[in-house]
Image (tube, rainbow, N blue to C red):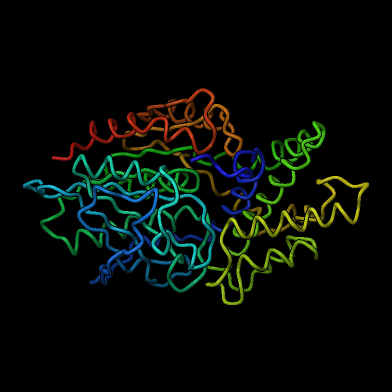
Amino acid sequence: MKAPFFTRHLLAAAIFSSVLGLSACGSDSDSSDSYQNSRVYLSETTYSLNQGDYQVTNANSIKVMSYNMPGVAGKNVKATAMVMTPKGEKPKDGWRMVVWAHGTVGVGDSCAPSKNGFTNNRFSAMADQLLAEGYMIVAPDYEGLGTQGIHPYLNLGSEARSAIYAVNALKEHYKTDIQGNWMSVGQSQGGHAVLGISEYAANDASYKGTVAGAPASSLGYIITQVAPSALQDLVNKGQQEVAIEAYAELLAYAAYTAVGIKAYQPDFDYQSLFSERAAKVAVNAEGTTGDNGICLTDLHDQFAADIRNYLRSNPNQTVLNYPGLDTAEFASNQTLQKFLAYTQPATKKLNTPTMIIQGTLDLAVPFPVTQSLVEAQVKLGSNINFQPVVGASHTQAIVTKRPELVAFIKKYMPAQ
């Protein structure tokens, strides 16, 4: 499936917002990883939306599991994950598990993957192939998506714990049906998440490896150097519509990020990061309760419409003149700046084998940024399998490298 127009032209957008978003992660306390709960698993219901062009066909059952996990605010919270069991005979010692970490959808509960049908083959085709090989699939919604509370968007620790405690819940509930070993695969926001999983599960002997597609990194550099010049370049080339779509996407991600900070700092005034005009759109990311915010496509469309209205009313202005983010407030906001300095995935040697997939024409996560991350990890002594995909975009690369992805999982965690 071809990516939406605005997704294909994002040299600044998704990454800019990722930078801003990661600022929410700085409040994480390592003490939350000592969380103990006699009951992690809570319940399961049947997933009933497996239909349409991208349905998963090789699952014997698909459930939506509820479980407990430590939240970013320091309290236990309820989370959800899809659980897919394969057809065919179970291995004698139980199933191995593959965690899928999804990309950006929004922060409102209606955006949770478990509340929607499958909309692309990045997940469904990969899931079908892994299920056919005999792996169980675990797909967390992430903290606050589909459950009470604001989703702390792009919070590295929260993403990691959403996966780790989903796995713990499955081990608790399925007992001898589970062999125990697991790996993780993620794309975009999920690429960032699985690098977090690798860090937070470093002492878990049952965690066997990571596949990260287009993971966000070096975000401070990107926001200060790449994003402004990229939008200006689009304007200079006369690609106004592309620039509008890219800027709208940037603002949508920035809004989710800013709202996500409220998950652990409820009094955070995220509207101050935007102009008065843009703030009126940004509030729709949160909605009226924090649980009823609108999802990515709709928020993007609202920002794009407002940018077009601004240009119609100000015909002598360009996209860059649209009053979006308040750059002065962004630069001086201590909550944001602290986190920009704090957060960067894969800063330590990764303990398990890691495949990193990256398209050379990725306009959301530039190839040189991921290449630098890989080179730094190699110097640290990490076992990195780098898979550049020449000519591939942000969403194409992981689809193109699906055979290599599956082979990597089979190598380091045979299904039986």
